[in-house]
Length: 515
Image (cartoon, rainbow, N blue to C red; front, side, top):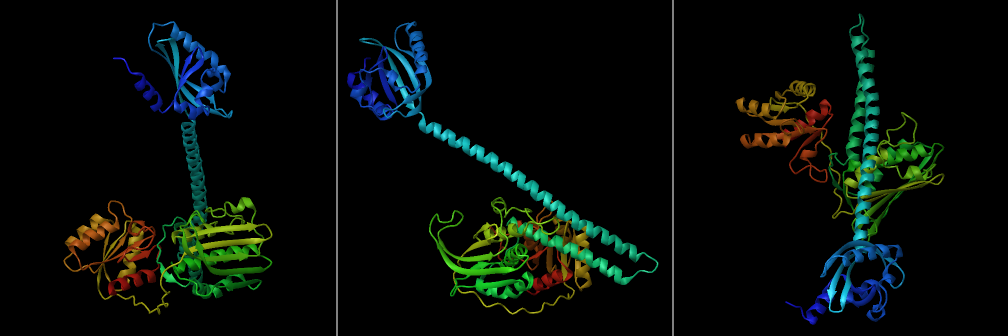
């Protein structure tokens, strides 16, 4: 079946690639796409040598070799092959191309048909993919380096604290076992153990805030009121040589944040500012309303925000320090003078609240930290009046579940001594067995969150199914399994954060029992 001239012409024009038909290297036929690709009009291409469309003339011999090889074979259509080319447009610009060549027997003799595909877009996509792969590898390397720095910092600080705890605990034992123990020495050494433990507690909370895994209890806040409340604390912290100036905006919209975290943010930034002004200076805290347009801040959506700036007139930072300022355990202070978690904690607090934080600094000119927090709806509520919490038990039965034996014993001793009946289990399966064998009521389940075999949340669900009157109190240093996406507690969930004191535990138990 022979194709009509109209059909052949239609196929030629419908092709998505440039098609050139050549007789002994001279162009005799082109399609519309060839005009678009090369920038020449059809009339300008016809009758000219196809070599003019090559950016690299060293390719001509190899193309001629393909043609000769095809001529030596039998008559008829013969596919010569596909070759990469550097082609050239009419304006002289080169571009990558791929040409599929065939030798065809036509009415006027044998001709060469070249189907030329512009590879510019494909090469661009390949380059982008390669760049993305390179960026991923670089980011992976940076993450590994950051993890190594983080692990090293944690190990360093905790080794120091553990050294204090172990040695002072030995001092306590030695003094207690001496022929004439000195009670004052024992008490003083025991207090050193407690102080080291409290520093460890602070460090773990800072790490969790940086990782946005800390428990957040957000409230609708008047940021100006929080700054006013913490003002005296900041003045005592920075000393008399530094002047604290606050400039708060009128009618500032409320924000939804954890007030304790905002206070910690201010204390961390004020501490850094104090250390940057050993000879005195000014610390300025100012607030204002801000509106962001789309794309104005790469980390935030368009909308209304509250801006808080903390500026000092201190020694400032060099550019290489500024770019690393929010890294965990990065510090320019001497060994033992700082953990390197102050700004990392600030970053974690702000980002967990849905905001952003940035830092500008120049040597001698000082440092400014700018915090943007989403503006919340409604009015900030009045602060509730704190009421004393009763801690004594009245014979209620508590099921305490903790996989760490020493901590389980500690909790049991505290609760039993306060008048509670205590059932203890090391895990979820044992707790369910104890509950099944216990004939009386179980008033409260006090359970760790993360345990091997069964998480505390699953244990609570299974226990409450058979004992619907049992209330639940979780205790954990890493409460992610019972937290919502923003680090807040799910509705109805009560959590006691580890490590806790006897007063913390008794207060949380009593509040949960009293509802």
